[in-house]
Structure formats: C-alpha cells, structure tokens
Length: 206
Image 1 (cartoon, helix red, strand yellow):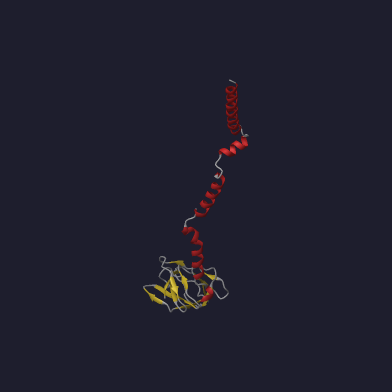
Image 2 (cartoon, rainbow, N blue to C red):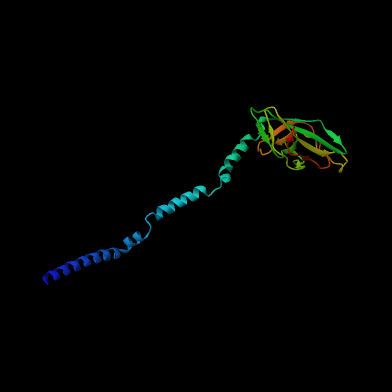
C-alpha cells in the first residue's frame, strides 16, 4: 500500500510539472505574447515588398524616356552650327515664295523637325510687322549629315492682291531653328511683305 501511494504521488508531481510548463507559456506578458503571435519575418517581408514595388512601379518606357529625350535634344541642329541662304523670289498667281535654306556646318549629323521662327528686322534691329505664321502641317524629321541642307518656304503676296499696303523692306531676317532659343540672322532686303501675309512652312529635305 505504501508503494502504491508513493507511485501515485510521483505520477501526480509529473502531471503538475507538465501543467506548469503549459501555464507558463500561456501566461507570458502581453508584449511577449504579441510578439510571439506575429510572424517573425512580417516586418522584413513588408519592407522587402515596398522596395520591390518602388523599383518596378515605373514602366520601362517611363524609366528610359528621360534618356531618350536627352539623346534627341543632343542631336537637334543648333543655331551655331547652321548656315543660311535665301533663294530668289518665285512669283505666280499673285503669290511670292522664297526658299530659305539651312545648311549643317557642324562636325557631325544633326536633326531638324518642325517650324522655325522667322521675323523681319529693320537696320536698327526693330521688328517689322509680325513673325511669320505657320503654313501647312508638320513634316517628318530631317537628318542633316555634315554639309546637308533642309528648306522652308516663306510666302507673301504681290502688292495689290490683298489691299494696297506693304511692310517696309527688311535689312535682316531673324530665324530661330526649330526647338532652339538661339536666333540666327541673314542680311537681306527681301521678302517685302504685302497684304499682311507672311507665312513659313515646316522643315523639309533640301
């Protein structure tokens, strides 16, 4: 009987020890329990996810567009590398047209696309009339090798076709190549604009 009581006491002590261990884990402090219940890697996973999302949020075309624009701008023909000449007038049906030619005098190829800005200047630099307005539509870009040319056409009217007034004859043409903020000048006494008509076309191959 004594042996049986001793065995029962040992078994009871063993059960009590197991229950104590389970109770200790369940009764951990709130901070410790909260930490244990959250996945250990959750914060690292979120940081990694945010980083990956930020790196891939912009499409490839958007990420490289700045480089493409910079490359295009670096190829644009600038005022300091271009030469100018103006053709004789081509008159017909009351219209007068002049071809204004731009020549690439630079060391390498460059690109022109769009409409130049063109104004007439008096000898003292004052603007005569108003700048040329655009005539016709946009045209494809023109790549000029060294020595290559591109043309635009200046258009006005014969005197009397549209009213009887004409602007004063210029001393200079002032030209801004397409996309440029720097101007060029060409000494000339033409065109004499009549009928308040003065237009310029987009650049085309010369």
